[in-house]
Image 1: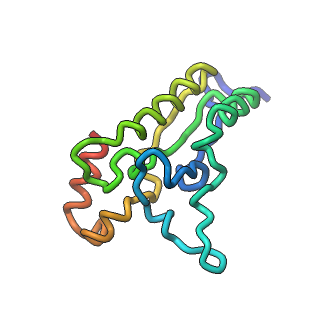
Image 2: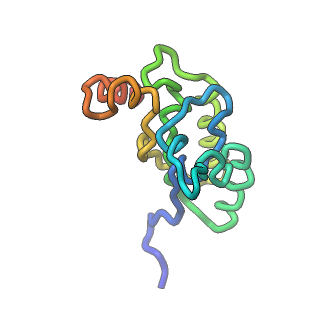
Length: 143
């Protein structure tokens, strides 16, 4: 049985699951970076280290015949404190390179802007989503 015309064969991930690079290029901390698991360690700091292996990972996706890749952008990589006036240029450049690499292999990026990666700074200052300022910060991030 064949997939119907236009079917998007692909995979998905969240930045917390795969990205790593929590301390690279000016990225701020998100809630997954401080979540303690298994005897106090944080396995999300490095995840599968997509941050350092994105080219080879995307090449593997192409080898598997992926037509799309649903991925999340880490809010704290773009706005390290969640509501910074100026976006982190290194963070924007990272995602630009990832998108370009996907397109090189005819893989359509499908982006999720939030996959449970709220910046820690917003939680510490506002208590996260219970405060309208966190919502306003999210709107700014989306823009």
